[in-house]
Length: 510
Ligand code: MCA
Ligand code: AMP
Image (cartoon, rainbow, N blue to C red; front, top):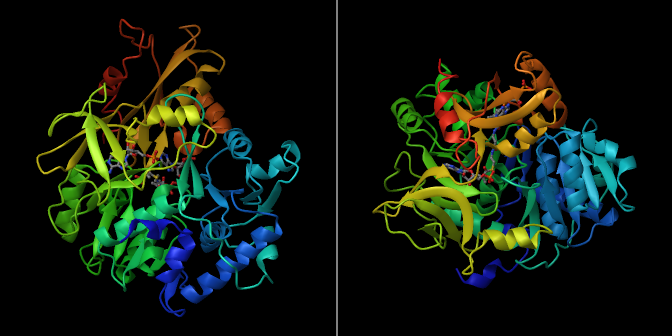
């Protein structure tokens, strides 16, 4: 396809490939069907509502809402109106949210009635800010505004370079950064995945991921839209519901935890997966054992792929061809992967170093952070992923570690520095070190080691957990806290995290 076909509003590109109006876009677990015809009308109504709220091209719409079809319509409405969709994890607490609202300076905030974002209406000094509600059953003040709107909307000619979404991603240092993804970043990636994964006209995706991350929104929803096909849309991953609805589906995308939970359930049998065409995994490493066990039970080799918020998907094991357990596959078409040393010097095959990526999928930089952006890009526009790995003889990528101090728990990223800073502020704590250790369910679990003021007083784990819960999203809370005499450091004064990981690696073994 010619390059400039991406220089268009993403909704318009999707719309060209939509099937007939009667075809299913979303089926809910209660068997409510939302057709492509309704998608067009409802997204127009949402876009008209945004316009009524004064939203114009480039305005940010900040959304912290429980998963529902209405959130997808809001996303599509943002695309159509040229607004920037800024989704946030529903687990974020008030203190985490304050930063996001101040940094993104939204025109509109959409959240659940119970969201701490509601409190900001009186606290934040943006004269034009409007806060509307949307709950998981699709009700709220936003919906009152949507009802009665026209069912047509002239999708704006934003061009492919316009920013479609800002997704916040944390880092080893500093506050979270808003990765700006353009219409064309998302478009090229969705159509590449549709081709690479051989999407069929009658495919049905079992959608169980959250829609506030790249995985659930870009990899799953955008690829479905690019294919003009349907999805069974569950509010969350619930193993019993997944088993109930899998026989009606052909595809599933998930983090490794989804697959280990399925394997652990005796009701998940060969028969349940019989109708499935493809299982895809990503966001965190899939253990070779899980891959093998899944194959033994279902006859399916889970297809593992690799991506990032900043880049959407970079590599994928092939649909037809060898799917290698432990590898994330070769670069996707049109995307370049290279492995370099500390001086950005290219390394050869099978040599381990920093993974860098370049391609039309790679984001446009961090919102309001030009310095951070230039730090992360090489002069020739390769992006530094912060992941460590090598390309083998067949140019399959193997990720062997991370240069960034990052824990991935059940597919969610947790940066130890953020947890350590919160623990260190607590009374009675001298210092802390947070590590990730192997965990059967979450892949990695967050564990904190602490030293206390007075070695005779043991600071209670419950006190730490309770205090952290006030400020941090629940998935970041340590699953175990250990009081130690001393946090080991090397001669440079750096905490020896790899030794600690080794020391505590069996604590969750059953
Ligand atoms: C929930 N809990 C967790 C996690 N999720 N703890 C650690 N890690 C987690 N991931 C905790 C809650 O805080 C709570 O603790 C308890 O578990 C039960 O919460 P609940 O919500 O019921 O949990 P769940 O429904 O069982 O959720 C587990 C999950 C979920 C289904 C694995 O975390 C999930 O959907 N993960 C997918 C994340 C994802 O989409 N990542 C993509 C990022 P307490 O009881 O103490 O309060 S995008 C990305 O990474 C890139 C682009 C890529 O490559 O895809
Ligand atoms: P995020 O910042 O949430 O987008 O997370 C991106 C990070 O998740 C990557 O930089 C990798 O460290 C990790 N990741 C994503 N997919 C995989 C995978 N298949 N295997 C190993 N790590 C992965």
